[in-house]
Image 1 (cartoon, rainbow, N blue to C red):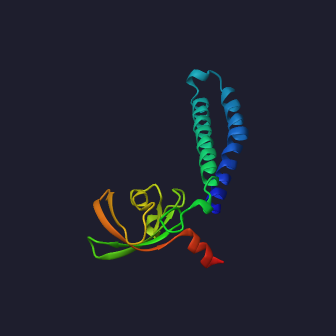
Image 2 (cartoon, rainbow, N blue to C red):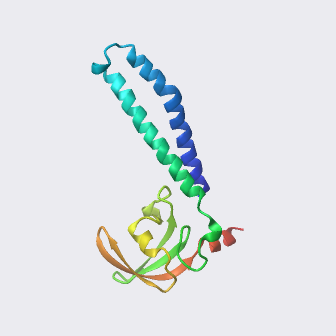
Length: 159
């Protein structure tokens, strides 16, 4: 989770530099071209300024959200952020392993699914042995939670 915050902070730093240093220069330079009503460079710079400002707001919000995750308050016996789960696909007679992560860390091809994804949402709060029905873009899927390793177990293993 720390690396996600670091990436977001780095993006924030770059965008704030663009907003406060680069874009004002571009806007001033575009103003020098004359009539602002027909000045494409000026309009493009203002539009970029608006996009950068909106993204900065999003980043501030997301960083606050990530910083508010208290690992001590995550359950030790149920699926939550950071949990590794082995799911038995009841329809396909196969097993699949996932780790629940933030949306920024999500990489489904490598087994990292967001807690806000359809499967992630369906798994949150469940326990080993529970059956879960998930509505995915490819239709309904039925899983049994075969194995659960919470973030607490993972941290203990790493120490």
